[in-house]
Length: 271
Image: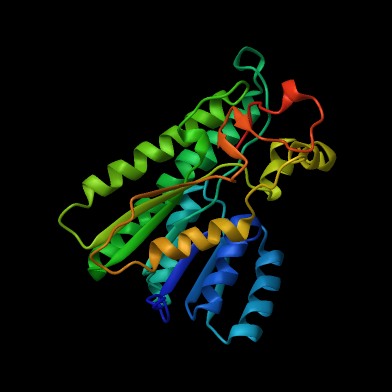
């Protein structure tokens, strides 16, 4: 496959772990220059050291909380001042927090998801996309979810935020008509990353148990899909990839082959 991203400048939010980190490694290996942003700067420094030594590419790291609009604006100015204009933006920062019925939901969990998954994506897009428009080229990839297509019990607010990501991606595409800026989305199903630990408020055992009985997606699987999207020729816009493990056909149909109870082979699956 032709490598069309070598030498491109790629900004990844939420780059300190999971899908963001996997994207950083995949894209560094492909010769891209990286801008990595996340709240955990110590992790970003470790990633930069490892990848820059291994692949000899330029990597800049920034501490960033996408929920903080003022911080995002300051970050965008820093990029301009350093002449770091992204060719590609991967809006990866996002999370699920809690798993409660709506009627007993935790307000802090709700705010955390809405502020990160919706407002955070909007904040970053609002300040970065104008740079692309001015440059005359660019590509935005928003990380959505199967949860943006199907609602499941206790997913309520997380589902709503991912439905919003889907709508915003489609809206960006329309608003950028007439420019060379492409907008794409990748929507993973069950993926075994740090995501689940966050959802279960740090309970690693609960997160681990969730994936028993089937092989989920890995962060690297999603990174491969994102690479496929951004490596397409300039006249091709892959608007969306819905990506699930083979064992998962929708949020309710997951074949847990190690489960000895035949009535429990299929059940809803949070993503």
